[in-house]
Image (cartoon, rainbow, N blue to C red; front, side, top):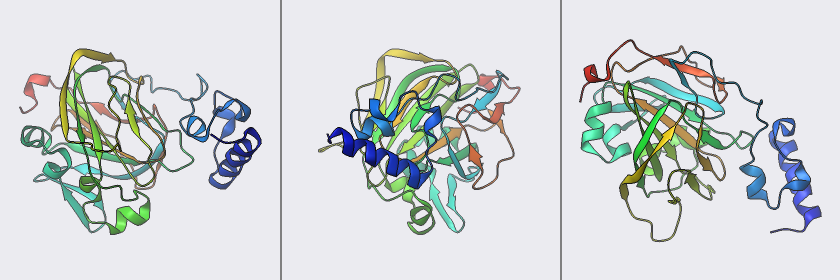
Length: 261
């Protein structure tokens, strides 16, 4: 908590330094009670548009494309010259087998980005996994120099069940990320005494594409995972700016029963 005049000054300074678009925020600067409330700000209802194609896979966040491609022999690309293993990222042998050969899309959130996380698909959340770990920076400096960074940092994984099979959203913790929160459970990341937690929800949580599913309290990275044959990714370029609701791919014309188990 800070004196009002100091809080307003810091928000204006931060916004100027990082280029935050204050016009799309749902509140005026003077309405925020603390800096974290500003950082996790909501947007105006019409600030983002969801791709109208119901088969489109939506970007779950505002950010910048890191790497994307096919998961080959359980290996994903972190950055040029750096790889990491799917099994180390998920800590689940069955899930690793399920997603091997599929598609991954990594999106980095910079300090100026909107930091709420939304569903890329319509479906049901029945399970999630929290994996404690390090808190290396996920800035380009960290991504290009810290080996296996995404599989070392703490992470909170949401699994979505859709009529085209399951897909996953991996939320990566990072330096000064106060918390990762989700809407379907009271779990939070970056807390004392945290332990590995793999849970099934007592009451499945239904989401529509574009619905909010979580919040980064300071910036980080998401990794979208899809099993083989489930989607056709769009042609995406490294460092391409991506907005929440923009199509990053589309579902393939395939039955979920045909996707490998």
